[in-house]
Image 1 (tube, rainbow, N blue to C red):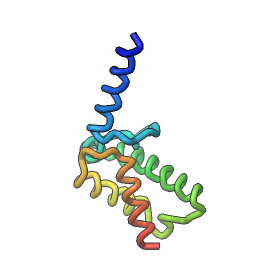
Image 2 (cartoon, rainbow, N blue to C red):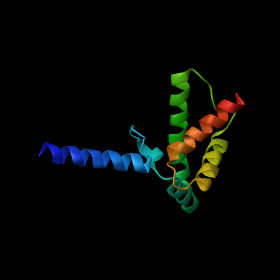
Image 3 (cartoon, rainbow, N blue to C red):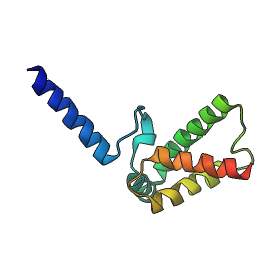
Image 4 (cartoon, helix red, strand yellow):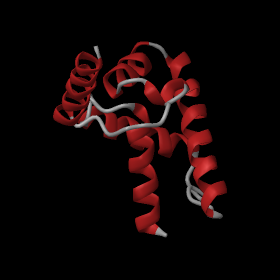
Length: 111
């Protein structure tokens, strides 16, 4: 019984390694949405833009809080969400949190 359980665990770990699954944190809210879905949602209805924008603003705020930074000051919400949409258009299989990380990297390079 223990051997069977150990083999099952190895199989799961092997698949995780093969697929490149390294994310161990939980993504809550809109950040776990695929970029393809984000682009589709916003193109279909303007009601989605504030939802994704609010999540992006919260993500950036948390980054600033943790690092005592002011990334994004001088940029309006429109510019930030447009940058995220551009990223998502080029990376449809990524999650929206990866678009947020991309924005942070861009802002760090400019600061």
